[in-house]
Length: 142
Image 1 (cartoon, rainbow, N blue to C red):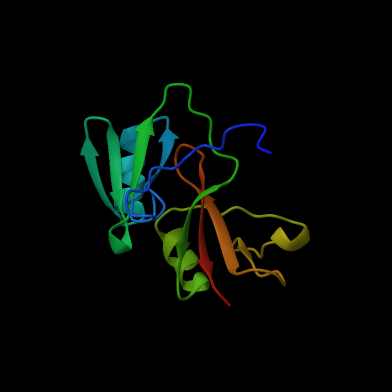
Image 2 (cartoon, helix red, strand yellow):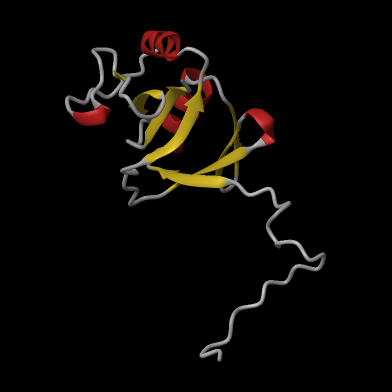
């Protein structure tokens, strides 16, 4: 016996409504000019301005929307992960471009002096922040 009505999903073709949807991610920053410079020049991504904010286009045709928020609070989690073939090389190149990597001193997140975690679980990974304080990472699958 049903105690409440289950929501129905409009499928049209019998498939889930979002199966072929081109979803995108978004996050906030406090200064769109700094964000555009960082993502476009420092990280080398394709960044375009539009009336609502910034659109970052990444490999595979995916896009990320970045918007200004007056009361922005930096994300306390990783908002973007960039897979690379060689995390050591990526960290060296990014450090030369002025990116500062986070250093952690304990547990599986413990990093070396460059900011690279090589714990027993997961990928080799290094975290850094954008100018708005949001966490990003470069990672190398094992």
